[in-house]
Image (cartoon, one colour):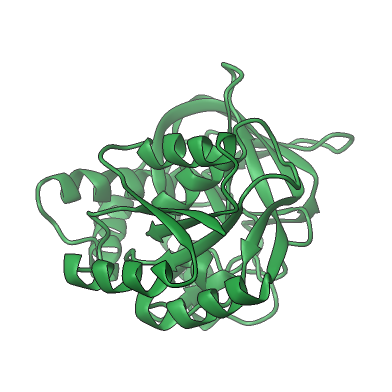
Length: 313
């Protein structure tokens, strides 16, 4: 079985020595080609090369950003049963997708179930989401897209990381609190949600579009605004029509407590199992996919892509 292992040497939670151990664990079972990423978007280029060259498996060793890039490389020409399957070794700070498919949040612990699945030829086809921009470009996401506040926080965290800050949960929490009170626009909602055949819903400050649950993790604690979202259905949306302290605190409390019900409240918007939604903005608004900041946009159409990719699990 030919496999390309795409490794991010800057992944948060894994040393060079640990990566070497992981690579050796796979060489006994696979005809393995190791490819390390050197710049943003490199994993996409490598995964696309693996698809063109007919590899059987692509192993993404990194965080959610590496996984997202590998997915977009594999699906550059669209879904196909002939494409390589994707295996994931979680080496990032959050590893939301790896945890969502049932892997331990540790690359060494995840190696065993991934190897067992490879030996048994076992995989699972999962649905993804796509985000289409006004310029016609389209990108897949595995677990979540965000427009507004959370994307602004991701942008600020990425700036802090450039200056040497460690991307741990405490950095996101500190950045989110500071940005909520002193950074984001809490007075002028910019977003309107549109669905084919349904009335538009305006007055939104921010929204999460989820392909599975949870949306993200704060350490070991999941944050889950759309608990009914899963890989076998369409997309779920959670949005807020208020940025006042009390409605936000109530929503945050429900997020932290978790449970099987979506976040409730008069200022809360929930959409479940949608094939397509569009978020239109009155002004450019921050946008992120799978935790990667992708600039400001004024119109994004999200669509569900059922059974888009085979995951080794």
